[in-house]
Structure formats: structure tokens, C-alpha cells
Length: 226
Length: 274
Image (cartoon, rainbow over all chains, first blue to last red; front, side, top):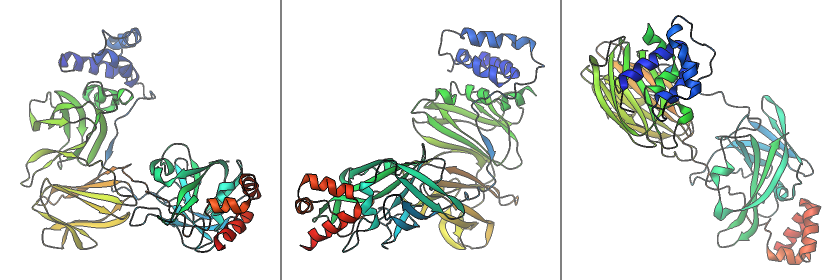
């Protein structure tokens, strides 16, 4: 990497005149990691001496190093249309959806109201292009069952409809229903921010552990956009 | 003119660092951004003796570049200098560690002399639901306070130091004042602080020359996820042994499951009321 800087520099300049596509092709030969340029690179770079006046190949898709004006304060991103109401086919689940964050102990906030579920507002929103939209609610009240107690019995393919504020509803189909032990809670996976878009409905389930005053598991429904 | 052509060729930029094309980037490469914070001076940036950024203008941020760990000699010259020999800044050696995230800033020191500072960006996870605001003093100016809505939140910050706050996401109406005062010499400006991101604000320029300015770099993807989804309150929905016994064994439990939530609800509540 250190050797022969001047030669390499001259080579880069010459090839740069050809435009970025040729530059990319020529790089394996320049970086010194092989015995020489590959036949393709050599062939492409060969016309360098005769094409000094050629315009650069403007449309060539190359990896780019961004240079931007940092003097402009970035605008806060436009917030997505938040979910407002959730219904699940084949159940009596018909709940308001409110935006929630995290509690002081870093657990997800869950609305107390029987008829409400919470959408994790720092993750993807229903209808997003990427990432996981998470909506969670209690499985019970202090004395009774709550609507999300029906989650663990959802059929594959059941429709989940999310109505949104200021945007059309989005419909998902249940792809998976799982009991996940709280002992092995995997927040990174459950709340995944990138990758294909999906909806997760989460509540509690399994056994009630008196010593913890908590359920043993989370019920996790994964649903894919229709 | 030929040097401009180098500048528009991103691949050449990467090539001058060795073999740092993103497609070839190794898992443990360092990431380097370069910020130009010297007023009124268009420069070229040389790395290991090669012109790497051509006609780099004040307030511009380049990168991040993914680079193999190692030491890089960086010099800043007047634009279109013939070589790196006549540097206005440097040459300085930047040591980049594997997986490190850095911002090299060409800026003025407190007395107004061009210098360069390599900042190491903290890539540790930000607590769930929070964002970070980092302020770096790279201006020809004495110690400053950073005010949020008129209240000092960072005090006595001197060139080239930086300080980081962990905040609830939102917009901070930030301004810069001489230390111990509240009269803004820069700002106020609305600085966004996003959950899981570090918004790094550089104060640059010169107080005496009346050209103080801000530059902003945002590092995303530092979020933490919630550590639990506490969706239970009483055990009313518990799927425990007594429930199964009441239901009459496994077969009935399956039947119960098939019948849906309503039946489950009645059985479970009955079990708990027993």
C-alpha cells in the first residue's frame, strides 16, 4: 500500500480521465493485492492514452463517497402516519392504538386501558417500507382477560387491519404465533429496525409466576403486509 | 483541471486510501469523516501524499470512508497546490483503530490558527428512547456555554473540546454564548435530536471575524431496544396446570384453544375464582 505512490497516482489520474467506470475496473490492478491487473481491467484501461478528451462516463453506477454541505441543520424527519385503531379477523380485538415509548426501566410502555394497545413510536410504523412495527397490549386486567388474550389462538393467514391517522388502512396476514420465554427476551430481534417490513403484536402468556408477579412468556404474533 | 476530475471520481477518492472501495470493505474497517471548518479557504486534502479531496469548501463534510485500520498522514493545502509539501495544516498522523468511528476536522484553534483535530465518535448504544447531542468547539473563540432555550446545558467548553448530552428526542433550540453569559454569539438554531442518533454540532469560524457558523454531522443506528414487553398484570390469562385440570386434560385444552378467546376467558377466570 505504501509503495510506488507516484506511479499509482499517475495511474489513477490517467484512468480518472476515462470516467468512473474504468476507474473501478482498473482498481484491482492498482491496489497491489494481485499479481497484476485482471485481463478485464487491462483491456478497459488500455485506451487511456487516446481518450483524454473523452467526456467522463456520467451514468456509470459507482460507489460514491458523499460530500455534503454540513452547514445546513438537518430537518427533523417527517413523522409517519401513526396507527390509531386495530382489528383482528376472527376475534373481538378492536382496540384504539396510542403511541408509546419506554419506561424508566427500559421496558416498553403498555397502556393501562382495557381498550387500548401501544405502538412503539421509535420503531417502524405500520405501512412503513422497512423494519418492524410493534403494537403491544396487556393480556389481562386486574381481574379479567383483555382483548390481546386472543392473540395466541390466531390462525395463520388471519387478517390484521391497522387504521392510521392521515393515511389509508394497512392489512397484514398472520405468519407466525409464538410463545417466547421472557428469560430469553431478544429486543433486537423483536424490534428490528431494518430489513423487510412486518407487524408484530405482542402480549404476555404462558404461566403466571407468583414470585415474579409476571407471566413466563411473551406471545408474539408476526404478520406480513398483505 | 485534471485534479477536479479526480475529485468527481469517487472511486479515485477511495483508491487513494489504498483499497477502500465499499464493496471491498472489511468487517472491522474504521470509518472516517472529514469536516472542513476553516472559513474562506478552499483547500485540497492529501492523504498519504495523494490528493484525496479537491476544492473542498468550508462547511463541507465528506465520508464516511471505510478504511483499514492503520496510520494515515493527512495534509491540507491551498486548492490546486502541486503537492502536499506546502501544507497549511499538517501533515498530521491519524491513527485509526479497527471498528473506530472518527471525524477529522480542519478548523481554527482558539487563537485563529488553522489546525486539525481527530475526534473519536462514541458508537456505544444509546439508552432506549433517548438521543444524543454532542457539541464540539472548533472555532476561533474563547470558552463558550451552550444554551438550550436560553438555559446553559454545557458550560465552559473550550476549543477543541466536545461534550455530549443524552436527551429525550425532540428539537433543541440551541445557541452559543461566551462562557458565563447568555447573549448568543451563534444561534439560536433548532437542532434535531432523534432517538437512537447522535447529532454532532460543530461550532466553527471566528468570533473576531464575525463568521461563526455551525456544521452538523448525524450518526444513526445507535439505538437500544426495549428490554421487556410487560403485557401482564394479574395472571388472569395464565396458562397453568390448574387451568388444564379444570378443562379436563390435554384434549380439552386443545378444544379450548380451537374455540377461541371467549371460552378460554370463562374457563380461566373460573379457575382463578375457585
